[in-house]
Length: 313
Ligand SMILES: [Zn+2]
Image (cartoon, rainbow, N blue to C red; front, side, top):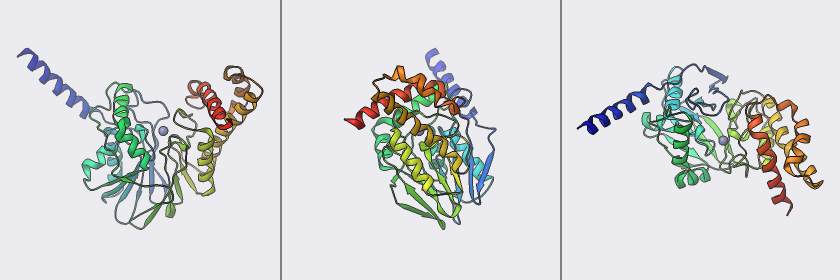
C-alpha cells in the first residue's frame, strides 16, 4: 500500500511538474512582412534555459502558418504556438525541421497535438536517423541536460520528406529548399522564403556562437554558407544568434575557412594539432568572445585535421 501511494504521489508530482514548466521572457521579432522569429539564448541546454536555445520562426500565409524549427521540447513548442496566436488565428499547416539535432525539432509535438493534420517536413536523412534512434537519444539528452525541464516531451518525427531544389507552396508563399551536402549534420535543409526575402539557415550558420562540428565538415559547411550568400537575401536567420543581413553569414563562413586553411598549412609543415593550436588562435581573435569558443576551438582543430587527412589521401 505504501509503495502504491508513493508511486501515485510520484506520478502526480511528475505531471504537475511538467505542466509547471513554462518558457517566458522571449519577445517575438517581426523580421519581414509576415515572418517572425523568437531568438533563443546562446548557451547549451541547461536547467536555467529549460532547453530553449534555438531560433523558432514562422511565416503567416494567406491560409495558414508555416513554422520552422519549433524548438527543443513540447514546452518550447507550446510557447511558440502561444506567440503565433498573438498574431493570427489561422491554423498551422506545415512545420519544417532544418536538421536532426533535437534542440530544433522536439517542439513538433506541440503542433501535432494542436493540429492533427499538420504536415511536418525534413530532409529524408533526418527522418531516417530520427527513426533509427536519434530521436530517443535527443529526448533523453534534453531531459538530462535540463534536469527534467523538458520532461513530457516525446519525439514527433516528420511525416514527409523534402529535399534539395524542391519547393513547398503554402497559402501563396514559396518555400525553396536548399540541402547542402556534408554541411552541419548531413541532414540539413536551408529554406528560402521567396516573397519575404528571408533565408532560414538551420545550424549551417550560427552568429556569435561556435557550433559542435562533430557531425559536420568544414568544407561542406563553408559551401553551404556560400549557397546562402548567393541567394542575396535581405534577411538571414541563423540556427542560433541574431538574425540580419549577409553580415550574419560572412563571419561564420570565414571562421570555417580559416580553420581549414590554417590546419592544412600547418599539417603540411608537419605539425600536430596540439602544436598548431597557438598559431591558429592568433588568426581567430575576432571569435574569442563567441559563445562556446573555449569549449569548441581545440576540438574544431582536431576535427579539421582528420578532415584534411581524409581529403588528401
Ligand atoms: Zn545543429
